[in-house]
Length: 117
Length: 116
Picture (tube, rainbow over the protein chains, first blue to last red):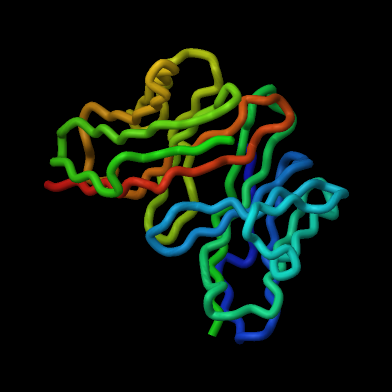
């Protein structure tokens, strides 16, 4: 079946640095991917919709200059957390929509743990 | 606009007992509805989804859910709980618009505990 892969699964970075998380659709082309953030013991919050070849659409309250999203190919979207701070520490999950299906077939990545120290 | 409300942040059942996790949704367009399970420190696993076909949807691991438009509900059930069912469960809604959907709005989650 379709697989969405995220890398890295865990990353620790120093405060003030930037870190990139990749989301890949391994056996289908995903014109649209989504990025979510999940704090411990909380639900998933949609951050942005990533569209191949165009700018991402950010949800209200999400800083687009801090969370840079690039969807340069049909199988890869990246989320870059710029000038990371400890409060950015979270679980980041991506999903990709398989456009081959007639319905909304969504596949989630395994998630990436970010710890900012 | 769409939203999901999961009633009860924590549900505890005995092994072998009925599992009922409640989900109510709000949507201005026809919805697709999903239930996901998340084990500690892991990603999401799709249990089942409603995509405007049969209103009673059967999923993996013996779970099922029924879409009730009149009640705007999509409750998740399992006849007999197993210890391995202990996890966090999320209900989610998206717009049922071909080629435009996929943006999921999640409920707050319900933690299911199973007592021996």
